[in-house]
Amino acid sequence: MNSTEPQDFIRERIAEDLQNGRFGGKVITRFPPEPNGYLHIGHAKAISADFGIARDFGGHCNLRFDDTNPTKEEQEYVDMIEHDIRWLGYDWGDNLFFASDYFEQLYQWAVQLIKDGKAYVDDLSADEIREYRGTLTEPGRESPYRNRSVEENLDLFARMRAGEFPDGSRVLRAKIDMASGNLNLRDPVMYRIRHATHHRTGDAWCIYPMYDWAHGQSDSIEGVTYSLCSMEYEDHRPLYDWFCDQLGIHHPQQIEFARLNLTNTVMSKRKLLQLVNEGIVAGWDDPRMPTLSGLRRRGYTPEAIRDFCDRVGLAKKQNLIELALLEHCLREDLNKRARRVMAVLRPLKVMIENYPAGQVEELDAVNNPEDDAQGTRKAPFTRELWIEQSDFMENPPKKFFRLSPGTEVRLRWAYIIKCVGVDKDAEGNVTQIRCTYDPATRGAQPTDRKVKGTLHWVSAQHALPAEIRLYDTLFLAPKPDEDENWKQKINPNSLEVVKHAYVEPSLAETQPLTHYQFERTGYFTVDPDSKPGALVFNRTVSLKDAWGKIEKQAE
RNA sequence: UGGGGUAUGGUGCAAUGGUAGCACACCGGCCUUUGGAGCCGUGGAUUGAGGUUCGAAUCCUUGUACCCCAGCCA
Image 1 (cartoon, rainbow, N blue to C red):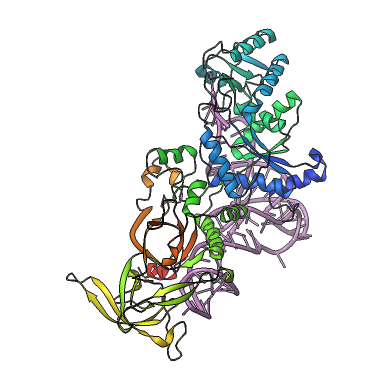
Image 2 (cartoon, rainbow, N blue to C red):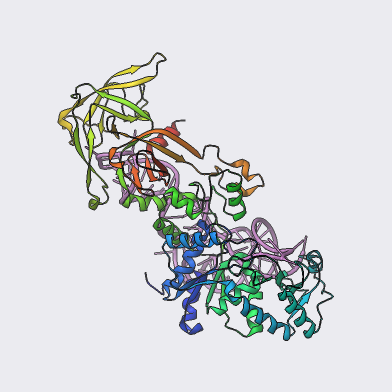
């Protein structure tokens, strides 16, 4: 990739800064997750921006956990987040940091601001602070504690740290402007008292810094040059700048961009947590979830997700990306790499009357027509086969190129067969199709006639039973969280379990997370629940289905 | 009604005063031992109104719409 070719407004701006020698030509970014939940596809966009921009300009990206709220954060999330970022294909080298590592420095800087008369201890309650803050249209009022002496502030702040006061009794606030139109500047809270055990610092602290006070200063300590974040922090930038300016420390440039929104899903941590806690999905890694762990289990590849992030671009406009784009990126990637294999989801027995009973032919099947390097495999062919129920119709409509009484069809990698009879049970259900095969057509096209349809199949004698999980979007509506009743819009058919499918014998020893294309059906990935003898596959995404479209149009 | 931000085909992103382009989606065709993939093609957009200019998506004026902000969350 060309390193200084701008592709978006952020890269454009950095390229310009570089020309002007800002930051001494350095480009250092950071990805700052809070360890209080799992990463999702929206984070992938941020990761792609933070790491991708650093890479493109020859700089580096730090991974820094914004762990300033001990009541919400856990080590489990730290581990999972690291795992997901690595899986996505990004590397932070030695640059793993935690905001909690800077607590002492932050405290010292707070003392400095107090000494400069720029911060004070406030005894107002949370409710009172809210009242004093004013509203969107009316200015706030100054706290009666705003003009305490430096000495008193210093003493009180030290005692806050020492644990002399209960939770919520006091806070440290910056002294800025209670009349500002920007609410973030109305004396923002810097520290609150929380007698809580932190996942890394344990009980060393009982006062914890707020985001605005911790984030910019952490960036500064790390020498970050560009602090990229989402649009809702635009209003916080004046405060970010104010803190750095008052302290006279290295001052990174904060740049905001629009977060990713995707159709047919919800993305907020709160809603994802609800889906998990209320058992609507099976967990954070349920294949229907937009979490990276869910997408991974579903069968998405890091390459596809990175490509998606590249195509989505970076801008400031509110957006809603169609799921179709993500799926396109996935299919494009899987098409090149997934081994082709035959699997029958809803089996229908075919008996080839003129094929010798007991005979087994090992036919050559190409593993991936897009990639010769993937070689070939053997597919056993016998007198009794399974084909897909949907590949047979007793009374077919026009343009149905599959099997029906009297018609011919090719069996992939094998022979052309002709349907000569249909067996039914007492209720009239088709139980078996009787066919004949043309021995001259093994792997070759007949010269005297044209046979259009090709079906996939498995030998009944050799087929392996498998469970196949068919997933659809969790929501049918493009914007499910448009209204408050988003949970009622959940797609009742987002998961369909096919218990008795058959797959070809070459899959006997397949391992979890291996990707396949089931020919004519879709891309499937081996679920972690799968074991030899009890195979389980997840449908990652279906193949584009031209027949399905014809059917729909006919309706 | 305070502050901040954003408006380009259905969706997303470009065009930085000089032919509005790309991708996905859609529609049509070709090809096909996956009705897959691939290939070719059609249609469709500058938020409204004024203005500046030879020329405006871009500059100016003025509307309109949408998003974010009143956590001791991040």
